[in-house]
Image (cartoon, rainbow, N blue to C red):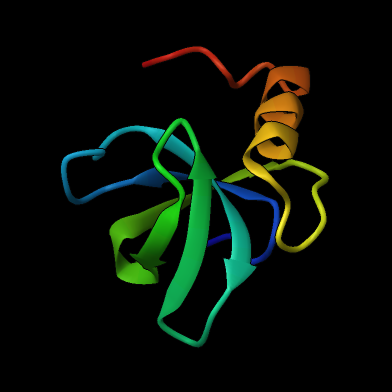
Amino acid sequence: MPAIEVGRVCIKTAGREAGKVCVIVDILDKNFVIVDGLVKRRRCNIKHLEPTEKKVDIPKGASTEEVKLALDAAGLLKEE
């Protein structure tokens, strides 16, 4: 399983945004991260994320615009 790290592209597996692509923007503690991307920016339990092999180059705490630009550059911005 890929590491939980800033910039890691994930798929949400639970909640109303399940199945959507998101990016880890910040790590809060061992259980929670901040995600953004094709989902609303929010705190998320890592048990509700499926990390992928892909990673985008963003700084810790990147803005929503920076995340969307990085996803677009990686070709991952299409709505699923």
